Image (cartoon, rainbow, N blue to C red; front, top):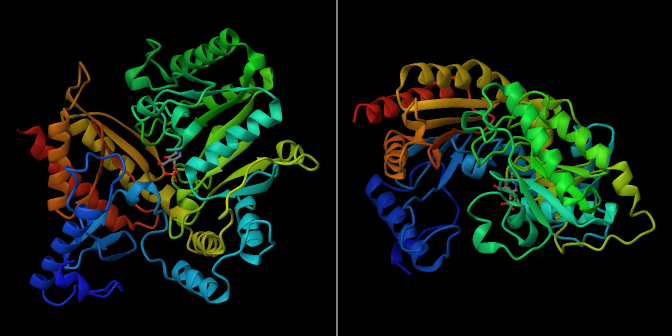
Amino acid sequence: MSSILEASTLVAPTAPVGDGAHGQELDAAIIAADHDRVFHSWSAQAHLPAFSVASGSGATLWNHAGERWLDFSSQLVNVNIGYQHPRVVAAIKQQADLLTTIAPATANLARAEAARRILAHAPATFEKVFFTNAGADANENAMRLARLYTGRDKIISRYRSYHGNTGAAVVATGDWRRIPNEYARGHVHVFGPYLYRSEFWATTPEEECARALHHLDRVIQMEGPDTIAGILLETVPGTAGILVPPPGYLAGVREIADRYGIVLICDEVMAGFGRTGTWFAFEQQNAIPDLVTFAKGVNSGYVPAGGVLLSSPVAHTFDERVFPGGLTYSGHPLAMAAIVATIEAMEDEQVVENAASVGATVIGPALAQLLADNPLVGDVRGTGLFWAAELVTDKATREPLPAGRMASIKAACLTRGLIATVVDNRVHVVPPCVITTDEARRGMAILAEVLTEEASR
Ligand code: PLP
């Protein structure tokens, strides 16, 4: 280990460590040590990004050298409450002093209170919460619940989706990550609505909605309705491009699920807990699912946690029958304390309302302006603080901007102090839900500058 690392404390500073040169040396040593020994997700290990973060506050992060970045990514779209929220940090410390761990079967105040706080924001049809460690295992357990409840086998999910990196969740996923991991059985995929690149030759949201629903119905009929346990969908597909569904789509899926006795599971791991400007995204779509999975924003990842909201009929199936599933850390007290404090702070500080308002008054209009002004911007879409700008080489052909140019855009944003999420040919604008109007304006101005520069190449 390099001596600068040995000499450094694990306690992150709120200001740069020593002078800038010392901080830079420390950042470089941390990156080198990380690349030497940490095996990274979804990456070729010889090509890892060089980024070190010391600490942060609100929507801002900084490294040891004192460089600061405005975060338009919320990391993996999970830090809805921003960095180092003092109430959440204090609650974790307080719970650590009281009880750091306890088995799931034991009743515990933090766990009971976390379930109560979550259910308070869900429709009255939901009665219980099964806690997991993250989003993938929430989806695993939701699929298991649907299968046990119906006695059926297959799960229908969508192309252009992500549901997590575990056995069935990754096979339910509808992007490239499924293909090298396809070991679970009983999964069927359908296309969902995406008007900009319609699979259905549609030209209006109404056509796209009707045809996507017709396609789903036809696939169910051809697969055999009695074989299908669940329809699993991201209420608003996130990683796939923030594909806000047309009005009527989720209600139509609900109607189809009811017609065939299929359990409707909404994956709100990314879309839930304020991201779309409401506590849950399905609230905006006139339909109530049977199961809802959540993680990320429930406590902004301060301590890993996820879970499944169970509607009463599904929950009561297991009153006398054993539920064959569990996790050592289900409802871990540190995660539960973080959930309670997060929800309390989000309520008191109107974080969800802030997401709706900054999205409607700053991000949405600024992206609409980019769509009008910049020849690279082919489509913009979103709600709350969940937005995407799709970049193309030609607005008529909609040819996606190539990866090299997208990488340049990401790097140019970073140089100007903005962390932007780039996925395929899109920039996702997904800042922490506590971002201020001024910060959002500043970030959008940087993005506009970078895209203008890129368009002039
Ligand atoms: N579902 C959705 C919609 C997600 O976006 C993600 C992660 O990005 C997951 C599930 C998996 O969550 P986790 O990485 O916490 O397992």
